[in-house]
Length: 218
Image 1 (cartoon, rainbow, N blue to C red):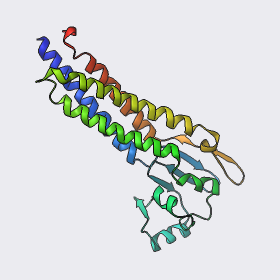
Image 2 (image 1 turned 180 degrees about the vertical axis):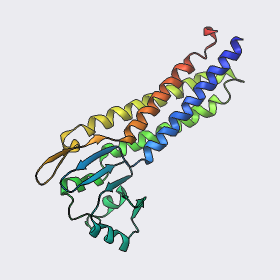
Image 3 (image 1 turned 90 degrees about the vertical axis):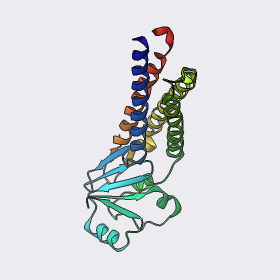
Image 4 (image 1 turned 30 degrees about the horizontal axis):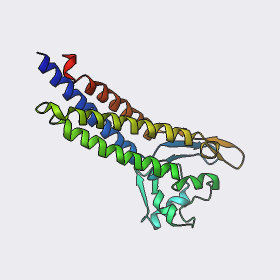
């Protein structure tokens, strides 16, 4: 009976690790770690790790995108998105709406804390994958449980670091506020950040369950 319970706990830990990895993948590609609503030009901007999107662009800007859509892609013809790589490599402002503010336009480039977040996220994928690989054999080979626990803990720790670092830098005044022509707007944490928060919670649950796979609990 104890062996069956232990096996169920191992499987649950495995499932939560997978869920955490899945949510981290979604967070990585989701173009909305920060959002801001610029009421002056009636647009909403979504700033992600790789892509930035805008909702509510002018018709003139849409015509410009239709004439040169190499770097731009749209979602449901409502959200227009562009890769941060474009703004990092190009200093021109071809894909800038004339109604946009320069302070907002600067948010579309890579910064050190973006790159750090991406690198640590990729590292969590590696540790999660290792944890899943070893987790698949823990039932038949208990000796590798220690490695599984270590990788599960490391994944959770790295996920926590991502949340703390991104939150810290996103709350700095130069990253949090955008100056408009007549007002200053505050950026808020977006869906991407909360997806990673969910991933961190899943990894924590997986780690706690992994601790209870030790035989002394049964």
